[in-house]
Image 1: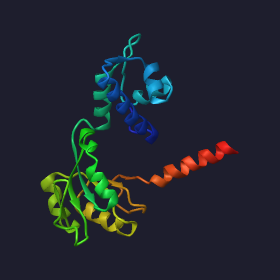
Image 2: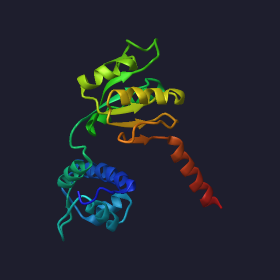
Image 3: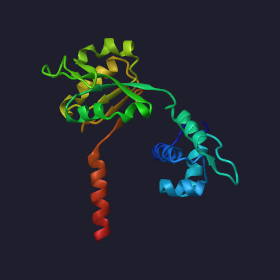
Image 4: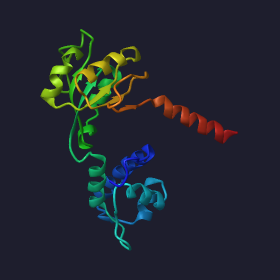
Length: 210
């Protein structure tokens, strides 16, 4: 990797590149030019070259990119060339939907344990997993090699869920709860808030109607 200071927007675009490249490979495309890849990803070819340059040299002049090779290289650069085991806290509507989303494992992430503090849910089996009280997370994390925590609780329980994940030495957290959490600086946190996108769409529509 050429730089440790990679823009977050670049990481987001790389995820799009992987998705597009996998679709191209599935359709039988083994090689693609930077121009065609750019059109498929809705960016310009110079942006693709700039994004990939953070991680090394890719492509063959006059030929383009070998699709499978580029997929493998991007996944290695992002650290998703292996399986990441995840713990989910909160088996409500959002959490249940995430557990049913079987595309996780295909993309390198597997929810291996589900936790909820609701006594009516504890002990139930959901998608092949027994729902367990979060107080047992600390003992289960090393047994299951859990590294990423996913919070899908109501907002008032998000911090408590984060505390359980920190105590269990989880290495990173995805927070779907509409609430900010406090964790040690060495634990990266990503917030997923659908309202951010709704606000963005509403603004663009409003801007376009002026």
